Amino acid sequence: MILEDIIISRVRVKVLSLFLANPGMMYHVRDIVRKVGEEINAVRRELAHLEKAGMVTKEQRANRLFYIFRKDYPLYFDLLELIGKTTGLGWDIVKNRAKLGKIKYAMLSGRYVRGLPKQAPTDVDLLVVGTVVLPELAQLVKQEETKRERELNYTVMTEEEFTFRKRRRDPFALAVLGGSRVMLIGDEEEMVSG
Image (cartoon, rainbow, N blue to C red):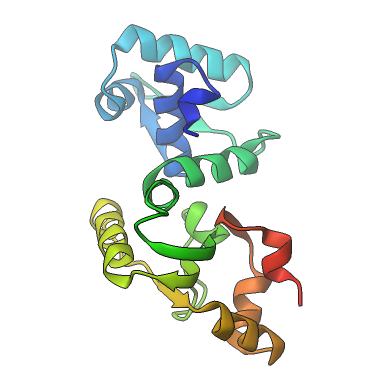
């Protein structure tokens, strides 16, 4: 269940992952080559394909050509969700699900996946509901914080606490449920309902 199962070009997967894991970033061709660890001709070929498909645009600055992923591409947000689930913390949680305990729901906030700043200090980047092995989860979060060079705000609740807070219309629960999200584990409709 990784992106390579859907997209057969390894280089394309790496290039898409780079752009979509860092929304809004603009990259020079050689910078992309360094970051994805592939040959320059393969990267150029994939960039040409992505440009022809309308996914990226290029911009000349001085003597350099820069590429950026187009936010108006029709599948942009779908691809962001896909990358959120198949790379980084999202993939670590899905891949290590058994080690993490009995998880009913796990979700990343849409703001986190889109690389947007928190609107309030209480905004949560990750919510995990279930019986969770906290040291295992903390280790995965710490790795992601180191990689992203920013602190993640995450919350863990039991199913009972989550249900109780939803029923009491707790402001925190309502804020989490009212925001955009990328479901890693569990059924979103079930999580949001009653």
